[in-house]
Image: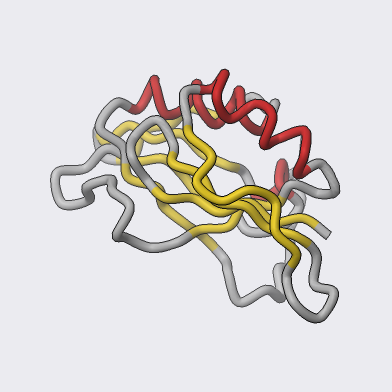
Length: 129
């Protein structure tokens, strides 16, 4: 099976979400987004990957590293909900997170967003057109 080459013209190419408990975080995002994420290891550092092939855009990963700590004051990442923002927000409590800001319109007709706290304490955004 040949690998597909994805050309991403978005300014966002890759993201990392730091975790204290990689398995708990993976379960959170798999439940939240209703996807199966890929487990991998690089130089004996485990990670869980949001594949760009799977997302159709920017890829990223969940990481547990001594120099990356989860928390609400770090980088803000907005995950694409592809028209399913209400559905995804409905899964936040079951996944172990907390909705911090409900579905809110983006000015100028740029869709809607919401914010949550994930299972690791990270502040994560959701966006959908």
